[in-house]
Length: 484
Image (cartoon, rainbow, N blue to C red; front, side, top):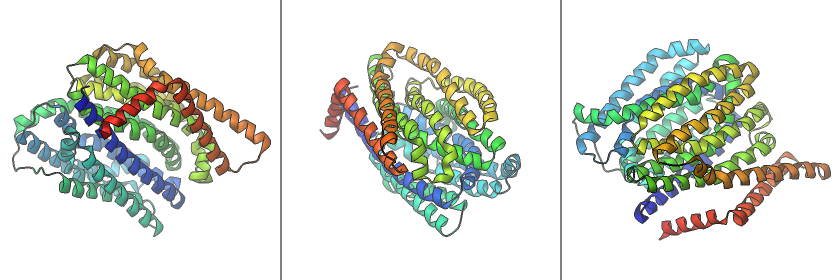
């Protein structure tokens, strides 16, 4: 990538990183507090509603945000048409949720799911007012403003949820916290983005964007089904408490997955779109992105495998202990998914959302079968099914993507090799330390957790610094470009 685009991309990643780190750190603190105020069943009930709402939410923006970012030339009529289409979709989908809510509640045999769905669905209407504003910021790589909006929304959401939980609102504290986030995001984005919609809607202009956006929307719907079929199966077959445990485990492994790798791919899609016709530059940039993601996410998830027992009990409390084994199993799936999310940036930037759509159709067929079989062995069985299918399917979509940019699998694995070696070494050293220390001292859970994390970080950094120092030099150069 040329120097200017590299700097803009790096700045985008930096500000997106600040956004995700700040929001997730605050979110993590909020969740720790709520985990001690609420029950696994409370989180499970909201999880049941979220399964259906998330599916509807994947439809809500109609893929128009991605279409605006990907399209080289965009005019005012495109933007206004997209805005009004999103608002109409939000209102329509809200009504769909209202009508469907009694059937969803009956399916899960939880009456409280119906009012939770109806109230939460108000967020679909509120969120439709931000689709174009967010797309414009992404297209211009102005992630600083997007960061301000997202951090502000996260803080308000967390404060509302904790306050309501303290005064006894129970499961509703989670619902109203989510609505507060949606509302504040609209307020801030409309304050910091100058664009305003006109009272014009042109179907031809909408159709131009929806031609690309429909594939994106279809892919997101199918990807959502792929990503949440485990929630559906656990909620239906194993109950709300089991879903509460499982959802907590899954959210922990998706911290590095969605909040670091998605942070990067959110920026690389618009960046890659500007060089979509230059395979050599795109290939080089893609490999660097994959490498940087892997050296961050792989050791985090590797470390979680060995510290999970102490981490869960110390941070969330003993009542959350049933999530430990599923959490450990899901870490391998999380590692592969963290680098796998970059596939979407390449496919979309090359205008091949159709490939992603077809792939998601395939996985939406095979994944539910594995998850249902796994459910016979509880939430650990579901976690195992997700992990096994991730390992089996990962090479195929990667090879399809590589072919588009003339990239060999050898070059791809060469990029993630340092992270693999470093993560395995981290696990070996921490396990050896834990076994050795237990024969000499009787550490408390928090003592073992802190010391294990410290040992893991030191070992990993030393190994990467000594054996793979070139990566550190590249990151240092990238930071220099950001500053300079």
